[in-house]
Amino acid sequence: MTTKVEKSIQVDVPVTTAYNQWTQFEDFPHFMGGVKEVRQLTDNRLHWVAEIAGVRREWEAAVLEQVPDRKVAWAATGGATNAGAVRFEPAGPTSTIVYLELEYEPEGLVEQVGDKLGIVERQVRSDLERFKSLIEDQGYASGAWRGSVNEHLDVGTPTTGDAYGSHGDSGKAGVSGKAVAAGVAAVAGVAAAAAAAATSSGGKEQEAQPVEQPARPEGVVQSQEVTVVDQPPPDAVVRDDVLVPESDPEGYTGTSSTEGVERGVRPDGDDPMIGGGNR
Image 1 (cartoon, rainbow, N blue to C red):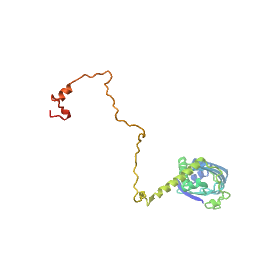
Image 2: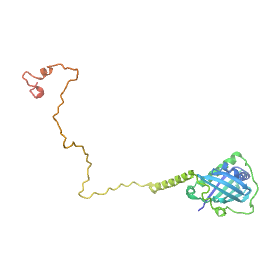
Image 3: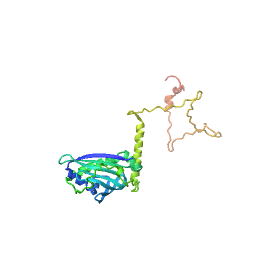
Image 4: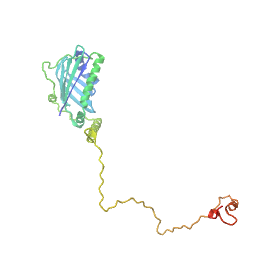
């Protein structure tokens, strides 16, 4: 299944300036974030190397139609399957609207997940914004090719069906470890989002339901927790008649005193501290 991306942007330079800059294909890496290299083999043949979301792809493309100040259309002839066209329409004497239409065929799990997340679409929008900044900041084109290709043959907007001889590189260009990690992270993110969605209904979170405990059969008493204390062995003898003699601290001799006797015992021998008569 293929994916189409359509984006446009208005740049504040004359249409000729915008078109001339776009014909400098080998300058594309300066403003196209995913493009690593473009080599112009002939007037109508280009070799591309791109890396988006960690996936590296290479392909050759043929320019099917090129009309100065109006249009450039292309289709891949080998490698990653893609095709499209870019059009230039004046929006006044000093302004141009750039329309870009692209169709491509994602390959493998990583590219398919990236496609679902709209990575390529965001990349195209970002590339157009950088092209706008580049051409407006410098105010002129770094070069120009004013030739034409099939100028009188309107090919419309090529699709992947026009990418003759291109059946995708089937990963032959290689997938980096970064790409695999990105793919796994993307799949995990989708799974997490699905799990979060499953916990909500109509925008409200579902209330947690109490866990129902199984009923006990009649006549069965729930067991209580019992603390087990270690008991002495059966043959042990427990004694409670052992007395420890009291001793004075070493080196200390208490003085004898009759103060307690004099104050606590009456002449008749009745001690009030043991329940004797009143004082």
